[in-house]
Length: 139
Image 1 (cartoon, rainbow, N blue to C red):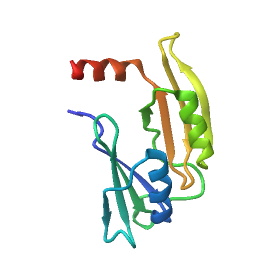
Image 2: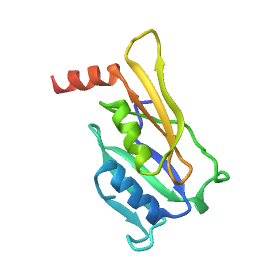
Image 3: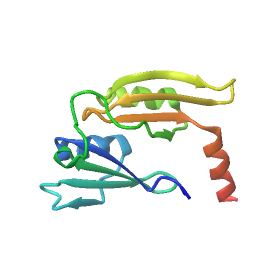
Image 4: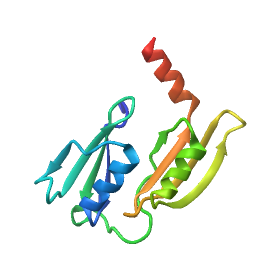
């Protein structure tokens, strides 16, 4: 049974540059790096309400071709301010992949996606269901 996302893995030819970019985006430093922080082949962040894991792996280890175009599945993270977060991603150097789209019949589900400077797709969304689940967990 699928229980939820544990780790999302992105690839980058320059792991150090990717670590710096994602540190700015997430507002935290990577907590893990191998083989070393100075010369990482993999770094990992934990963030958000459920401490989701985001791993950045050296592109030479990718099981698929990593090119200059966007690649990978779009994993969407809930954000409270879709317009503001989209603007912030673009200011950090991401490129627009898909602008804000209303999903459904005015149900509050709205998405957008960007391509990070390393070719990975990042989805963001306003997701009322996420907020309902979170409120239920907080009781």
